[in-house]
Image (tube, rainbow, N blue to C red; front, side):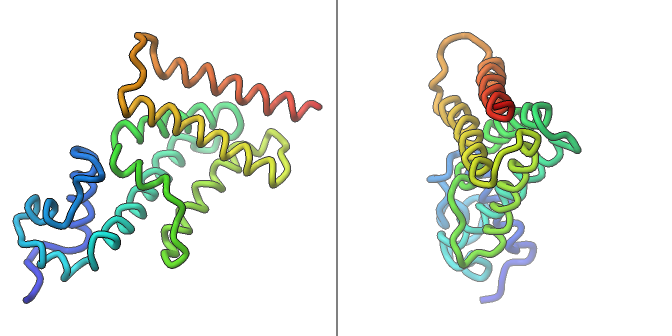
Length: 190
């Protein structure tokens, strides 16, 4: 059976991403995707080797988008200004792309070099913006993990409807970021 005209891996990934973001990652199955595309499920196998491969492609796509959003937000800034910009872009990405965002959290498999490259790029971007704090290599990794955990905590709790008190969430993020960075600044001075 030949592939349907107009149906290619890019189209499949875009439609799967849309489905993940609108219906949730668990809603992305080959059957649901085939229905969305107006094809039979077996037709998808001409382009992707099953659901695990599709999720791998989606993770790469999500990391590409996240890297682009954070890089654009940071611009040439480093330090405090860059962290604040990236935090806003990070939480904005999680709000706009909840399904793809979930896939960006997983460590890359060793056989997916593009996923690994994009994950490394993300970590290096965080390390770069934290460079003014004078952290050792290991401290930098701890700080990146802490910052990503902080941002993920806000993104995840908000995404699951966990912030019911009517106080602006972005102000809460800014409050906690300020204290986190003040701790890094204090460590730099000691």
